[in-house]
Image (cartoon, rainbow, N blue to C red):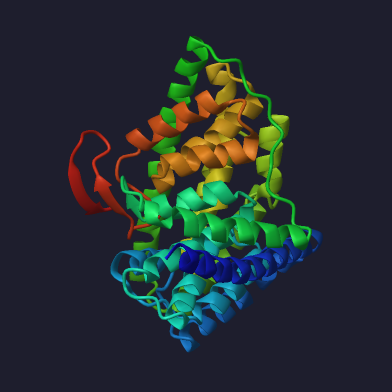
Length: 401
């Protein structure tokens, strides 16, 4: 059985690494193209029409990260067409300036690959979900260059409070193989240079306050995403009309803001907040608004990098009020808000170590654990199951809000 899972993980990791590398390079290319030619923003309506069309013609409407999580829980099949569709749709969203990330799309690509590879290898109903998790870990690792965090995140995100340790070896194998393939293509892992504070009681108390803010903003972000998605579906039932309206709103907002800081994933702003400690105080609010409009009106991509953007800018803006170093507070904000939004304290903690180094480990632990506890049962992913209560030793087994 051990050898079988190593072989399955190798297959998933190789394919996931190749597809993930192609996805990483494609999104990077269209992002550079948009930054060099800002007028591509005006292609947003046309790109939106294409996105709606390809989802309709492939009959993958309504299939997203929640469908991947549902595949893990209930064995639902993920159509293989979802892989090229989300790949193309995300690239188009980034090309025209939609506010979205990549890693949510990576979970869909990886989960779709894992599900269909499992089907080809004739895995049974108890084995197939692990193949899905392997795919999620592989492509997440390929996008971020964080194989350990990708492994734990994939195992932790589906059922909060319950980790299937049977997936540790397969998922980690797939994640490291995919990471190795990205290195062959010269894709550098995501890393940030930040100086951690010395550990102190005062520092811990300040970080607890920051964690509270991260939890509250993560709830706001998740609730706004879900409510705006329902409202746009209600008032604009035609998908073509809906995405055209959304395009218009994003274009108008971009001109009102006067720059393109909130279009695309926003990695330059994250780097500026973490490594230079500089950010506009309203940046996290604007990113919430841009992302909610982009995704709820029908554009595609992930929520993870926007979540990191919101956390970094929130932490950086709050730093002077709390007496924290701005860059380190931005890094803490990234970890805390990500944890509050996805309910993955261990994955978030490991991600912070891989992104920022281990020097600030105690503080990252505090911000992740406090944000996790205070963020309630809201989540970016409605199919996520909260297996155990966050407040007491109680089995609750409910869907996230």
